[in-house]
Image: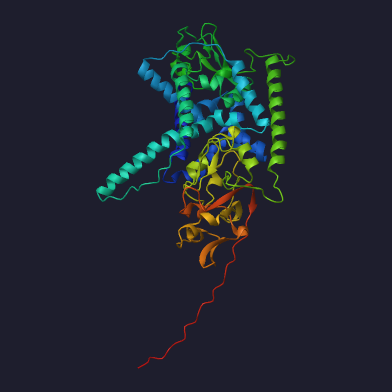
Length: 517
């Protein structure tokens, strides 16, 4: 059985990696099937955020914790897409630098737990900045969308152009949306650091920076099964240490620093004998008396209790922030948050900037921000009506969010959510400035909150704010540049718009006319 562990791990990790990658680079909407979207629930930090912010239990989170308590950090090797991406860089390192030989290295335990403690501290203070930057799933999502997706779109459009010249129309071009230059530079730089760490030091990121790795490292201290040396079978060849990308095997001392082990099973595969295998932690070999107290186990319980207390405080803080006010507050030309976010406070305190909503948006009106939400909200998505507008019949983004920042909405519920209210600046309208007819804003408004009314001999837009849902169709259609004559005033707390009246049109009955001659 042991000889198949690595093969199974490689197969599972490849399947998870390809499925999650498809969510971010898919340009044909194939990835929106519920099975693929549900894979996001297995990602640790987004699932934790959902539990903290909403209180909804996540089966995927329970499964990851149970798996870790059973056999260690299997999540890091098989489920985490960023871990598989690092494995690809490690494999590239072996091909370009020759046979790669790792060696046992000291653990950066204090540094690793310091990153975790800082992330929890910022979270308790109402900021998800460190979580946004360090969460492996969100980190991978930004890399996939910002760095990989443009290549996919460019290749598709080049193929569409070539097939069009040959009168073969099996491929169609898709809009190419670029991210802000600042977002691209920061993402590329952080990805470069990650790739450098993986290329030269294996899974160093997972054991020194990653907050998910730190939590699972704590849990794996009390795993039921753990990898250990079989002193009777070990041939003293050191192959296990040389192949360990977590650099946690000391073959001279016959020890495996199991909390650092990412369960890649390379050591088992490389061992000519079965010198390393799973053993029951509390079995006869190396077991502890029932009456004894393990200090390490006590520390783990204390640290877990501290994290639970911190999470509880975050729950109470978020519920206080997310409580809907009686009257929504509006901000002139402020940042509009996507549908389902309920309020800016809820959104910015729960979003991990994984970019899945950006990748899933059919109209691509959701885009990445940089510092529009402030430093603490770096990279979090926003609505950009200069690019497109929010389709009235669409609520896709609310169904894919893994962290609870966007709550699920049906299409009928989404039609009543007021993201903001459109404001009209008469002096900037081209009807006034150029004395020409327009009406683009009224033609595009799905709720008829904007209607053209004759005023002083000119047809000008008239607003009915109660009907406006803040979709941005009017702002996107307005031809005035650089500042639109009509724009959406952001709502810090989403309101509820009135439904447009459905006028009943009576069918005219045709009166038969006798044949005239």
